[in-house]
Amino acid sequence: MAEPMHEQPLAEVFDDLVRCQLRLYNALDEALRSQHGIVVSQLLLLRYLREHSNVRAIDLAEHFAIGIGSTSKAVERHVTMGWIARVAHPSDRRSSFLELTDSGRLLVDDAEGTFDRTFSELLAAHADPDFLATTASSLHLLRSSLEQHAVGRPVG
Image (cartoon, rainbow, N blue to C red):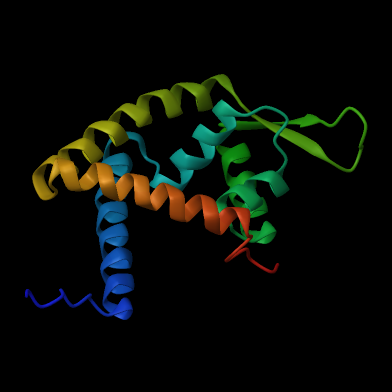
């Protein structure tokens, strides 16, 4: 009878996951910075605004699981760059909605092409396509469960 496979220790799984994420993130940052002057976190924020309406800073903080202080600073930088505009909330004078400006929309559309092309090239060069389909599905299920149960939500 065959001996059962020994699973990798969870600390090593976590370490692999984090290191893969960091290396991919850094490579994508480099491509975006060199071609568009932005980094991945900026693209993700702009893309979220393109795909959603009536977004407030608190909505961004919740979606990206980051603190509201960090979110507010990021929004202010994007407003200053002319990529995001604040629009008055119709029923709450203390709040505003965020939306892409025309230059923000052009930037996200252009940068998304660079992101997709670079990410595809990285995956093709370093990963088995069959493995990627399984991994993508597993990560999606894990993320959905973590979000559904508010695991890892920042406190402040």
